[in-house]
Image 1 (cartoon, rainbow, N blue to C red):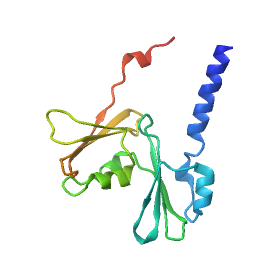
Image 2: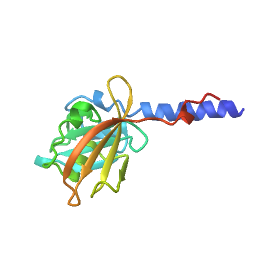
Image 3: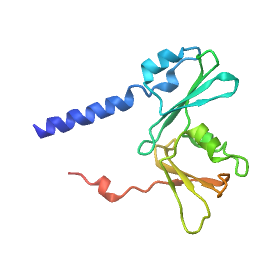
Image 4: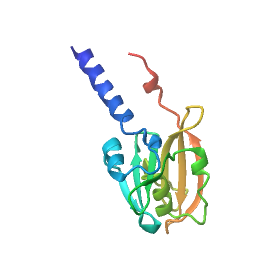
Length: 165
């Protein structure tokens, strides 16, 4: 009985992750209402120039994906894409981007931490590279919230997660 309950819970969780997050398959021109009906409520809604909006669908802190759905001023999709990728992270320009720029482009980070060797917060995003490896992307901010450096690193999982029961 317990085994079947556990299987049902895992299946429901996986179905929830799969449904609504084929956001990048939403065609340009789709009305906002259809996006919400398909993907549900976004994690955040941000204004865009020209009266448009960005709907952010983020799986952070535990997930490794974030989708941005951009709408024009009339509420129709102009683009929908998964942004936690190496190519997208490479768009970050140290010295020019701010924390607000990073969060607008990638959504909220998985965590914001500090270390003694850096005078400012460090934003951490979890993502998956093209080979399927679990990765981190760190964005180092100065005390004024300006990006000073950013780089990827491997996420090394604890062996406890690899244990088979």
